Length: 266
Image (tube, rainbow, N blue to C red; front, side, top):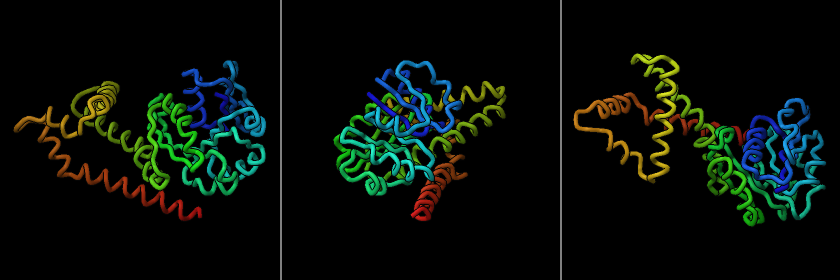
């Protein structure tokens, strides 16, 4: 695949690393205003570093935009005259709708929105995808790219704001839960590094159990709770203190905030 990443910041670098290590590229153009910040990619076969977005677009078929939201519209207008029927546009820009992209590049263009999370850096992103009408013909390309960097799911565009909260902000929510588990483990007598290792791998194991078995969380909870046991007593205490309701309320609050931001941008 001939791919260009326009705006190789933190997210763009993570995508680039995943594409390189999984041998997904024929050529990979990485653009950045200051090339020094992406010098780590020099020397990779097929990887070209440039500050010229036009050069990257002309020599690529798949264009992944990972720029700052405030810069996206201007960049899209700059490259629009260079687009041909071969180009597939993949935007990772939160809040920038397909309709706004189509207004600049035309409805006939293959337009896809992708919402990955920061776990893309380790090949474990949960990436949500949606597209315009034409983009549906190329959604498999986006799936092929991002499945190399984790897992994908195609959703309607009107669910992208909610997906941002569940998947992108969700990384922070899970990090906080892991931190809390680590703190508890320290209080129970473990050294800090041991406590974090216990918390991280237990969290990973819980997720993998559900991924592998397809079970509901309560099915797995039932396997480790016994009558009058320590697990159920701990779970009940957490619920009395509002664990589930706090998490749900926090996510709903994040969703309300992201919708406020979107309204302010219109």
